[in-house]
Amino acid sequence: MLDCQFGPIADPAKLAEQLKATVGVVEHGLFIGMATEAIIAGPEGIETLRRP
Image (cartoon, rainbow, N blue to C red):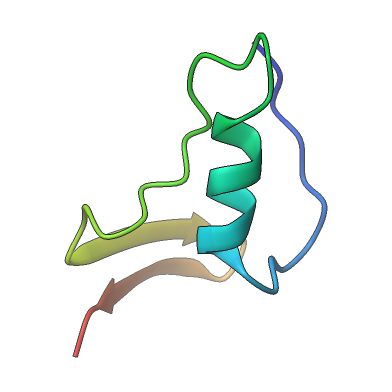
């Protein structure tokens, strides 16, 4: 298991496809098209993002 931060992802769907095609990668954690809401916790507090 590897937890990394590389900054903003320009094309999440493309990255998800590339990771899925990589030998040895079981899951990538990019929930493309699966969630309608995300709750983000950060130093400034909690933010809720909802799909329009």
